[in-house]
Length: 328
Picture 1 (cartoon, one colour):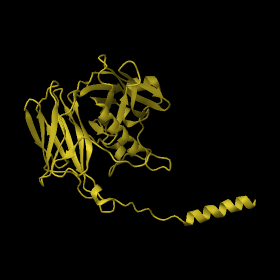
Picture 2: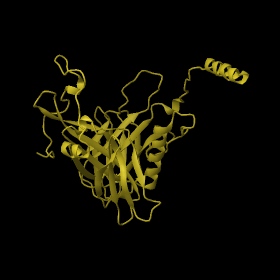
Picture 3: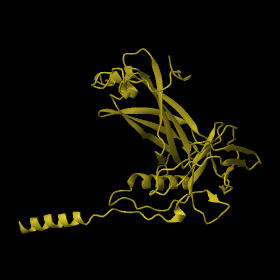
Picture 4: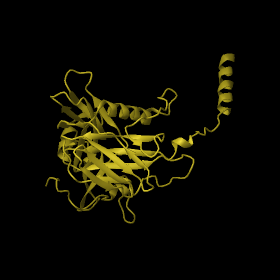
């Protein structure tokens, strides 16, 4: 009994010792350039996004690097340029070839210059298959791929979801789109004899999700990575997903492949990769979902969808223009 009381008093004493934690952010770690993107050499568009780090103590400020001039320069002398928009995104529409190496040059609106070295051009294999497995109350979507030349070994993916939507008590349809920025999906086949990734998990959906009410589509993008790029993303993934617990990974410095020409001592965050971006789209119909489980169908919220104003779940929140790739 005495030991129990001692533990109680100790817990009270420890609770009383709590003080707010004020992180100390070195000035050299503030206002750092963050570079994110992939140079597509498969004939598609290349997009690079520039942002800046912020002091956590100050109110949110615009952190996009607007008006910066970016150049992609090839070993053959080719040079194409683009300027970052209000979201800090520069889009290059000129097709690039998979037989050349390229580097990225950045000049901010204040004249600060940054660059990469010439980058290895990865010949990313085609996406073999997109599918799903029934998992408890829903489905787990996954992607599979194989490089028979065994030259890729390191992979990354992103995806965009689109689903057909209908306003409650309405014949009008629209199409919602969602892309999840910041999520990191990476895998490696280094430990296996074959350069193959089987059923890598992408996203889970509840069987009664509104996304599955009519017809759902996922468009998957696959990127080949160098070992250095994979290691960078792996560390970034651990930092973003595990920090916070007492046994979590401790913060560490991320060393990317972008450096400052204007001031070599300035830190830059980010890793630019180069290669062919592969793309594959996959559809799931509501009839297919009902065959899995007849109880799986989206139900409107319990409250009536009345006007004004209807709950968000009752609205058609996307565009009323049917995508060209959408089936009839």
